[in-house]
Image (cartoon, rainbow, N blue to C red; front, side):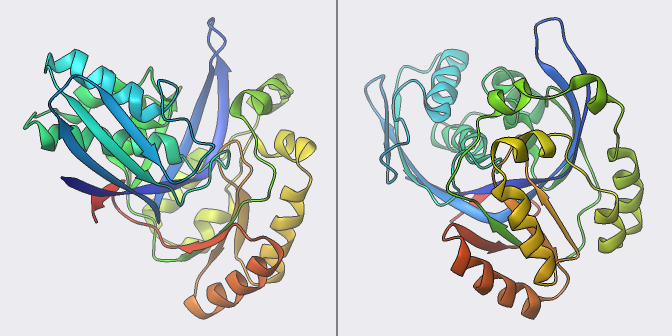
Amino acid sequence: MIVLRSHAKINISLDLTGRRNDGYHLLRTVMQTISLSDIIRMEKLESAQIKISCNVPYIPTDERNIVHKIATAFFDYTGIDAGVYVRLKKYIPSGAGLGGGSSNGAAVLEGLCRLYDVTMTKDQRVRLTEKIGADIPFFVYGGTALCEGIGEKVTPLSSLPQCWIVIAKPKASLSTASVFSSLQIPQIFEISSTDTVLEKLEKGDICEIFRYSQNALEDAAIAKCPVIANIKKTMYSQGAVFSMMSGSGSAVYGVFTDRKTARAAYEYVHNLCKCTYIAKPCSCSFEEN
């Protein structure tokens, strides 16, 4: 049996740069894996079937699940006539912009390689997974990285300095498609923050890095889920040096430079929003549990 911890992510910046002919939006974003994680247990099956179980009842366990798609792609790619049983213990909330499903997918690919003694380079993993989920290529790398195109072009970056991150996910969830469909695209394309974030990352000053961060999807998401703006205000009132929505939402994170303030903020926000977590940046997207 293989047991892996599968980490969530936040977006440090998120800019839209254009739109492809097939309708996919082009983006430029800096992502960071964080210690909030799911637990994945995997074991071989002699029969050629993919079996998934999950502790969260509304998460699909059939062909709709990213894990199922990744496993199918793996067996098709390798030609191995066997199967896998994957047990997901979810802690990363769905519909939050934290990449839980994509993280699970990258971790399951790693687990399958270990179970069946298959060697795959990062480039091979990206090519295998990029059409399954736009965030999966990032999770092939983990840590701090620049992602471009529709997410498939990944460039590892200098690590984010030490900090504490409080994440709150309101009851409402947002689908990526619904947020993208509401954007005023010509206006969004003129806004850019990622270049400055990249420059500040090299200097390693946490306050300066986040001073210039922005999420091009945030206004559209707030229009659909106004509580996002309220959570941001609460994070700042509790001492966050920065607060922003992650991905297409609806989770909001606050960045804190000291543990005591972060812990106090977590306790305060948790009383208002049950789905609240405290985490730290981490350098990988999955690790042995």
